[in-house]
Length: 337
Length: 283
Image (cartoon, rainbow over all chains, first blue to last red; front, side, top):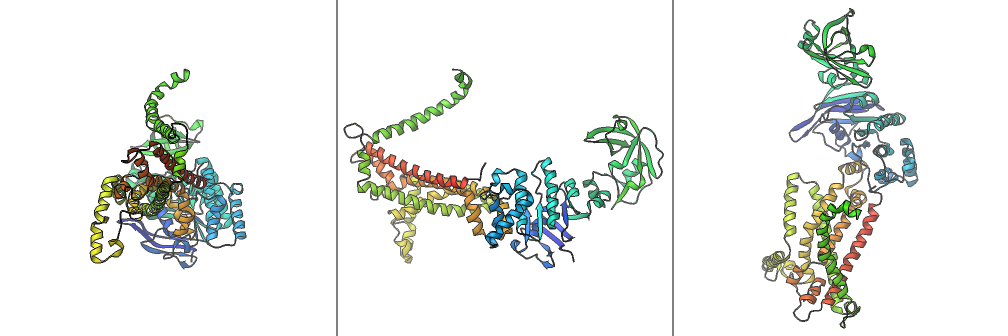
């Protein structure tokens, strides 16, 4: 049996069904991300597990015990919220000690635990500071320390980095992962940012409209999306239905509903390459745009717009309206369900 | 000169307001201070203040006014707190409806309010008569024309004002704090004692000052109900300016200054508490 099990979890708000039967198993010490667009139910699922929302149907098993009906405080779960949830009238030290004081932990031990949690997030020198005097990143690190100080069985992170600027965000992603590994704490991380999920997670659970689309390791999800949604959401795949694929690459009609092609697996050149096991068709550059070190082309293939990513190098520069040859290895065409 | 050239336009807009403040606030205040320190011979004197702090009637008026204002403020705050708290849990529609009701009742004061209370709780008030018939002694003997009896009207006009002032403070108490506290096994009472109320304390103290000043300066209601049968500061002050027997504007001014002093003292205390709780909460 897995450490955490979601068994057919359903949640409705009045007439709207937000979670439509989620079943998922999570192992001890695993870092799993719930990834999906806004409104897909990822935060609701997290809140249901924490007990802050009641489920309409289904159950949660944590460490072999059914916790579905337990009050939030009985579940031994730590949580970091999307927005800063530190108590503003307490300094950092008091914020961390608050939960331990309620648990009636001896004062000396509280001091030790708080010290060690603050050391872990690198904010020992800020223990007397009030939340208003900390930056957004520091506040979230304190919130993380507060969530782990009582040694919960599971750590829930509800988009904790969404309000933090890009540079600091990268550092915090690495820091959160380091702390999680150090404590070997089972962690569920909610995010709508696929790069963040890919970078931090052991496994990614992709959610859409209250249902799981795909669960797998970041590499697995990136290289082998199973559904149209997964292909579109992860890695900006070109998703062509059978008819469009036939028109673009002049191939026989596929029986599958759609084909996904990663933009970086398509090559463009001025002359035909005659590669084996590849599609080679002529097209016209519609638009080119540089995205950092990548040049993104939009190529018209017989009326079908296909995105192609190449490295930004002088010999791979093409102009708008230029006729080009497009080459695609057949093994890079992923058939979707 | 250069300053005038630079800020001339801004000063033009500011001037009418400044004029208003000078004419209707500063001049009356200075005149009141001057009058209160004027003796019968027209020279400087503290006789008025000596009279106020030695004569029983004025001391009683100060004591009664402070007593009713403190209780109306404390009781009003308690009721306001729970009303505003309940509003945080209400739907938007219910909240809007209730806010309209509060706005309406906050303007329902003075003469119409007092007459309404006389109709229901006066000597021949509806509730009093019904209570006498059914033998409900608590209400049957209700005396609206006493300090204790008047308290209910004071409470009535404190509730809408206090609730309206406290609602924004409740909105400052974030849902995430409550949820984080719940996960730490913190009871609702502990949450409000340790987090909610301390965070709201600056707003609560601001409201306390407003409610106290509102109660202390209330004039129409006590004038209509008890007139001079119970000594109260606002009635005594009015008597000195428009009284039928003998007008003593210098004593009225001194009483006004005493009233102002009490308000300043209360606002000072509330500000001190406010600052203590504000510590660390804002940058």
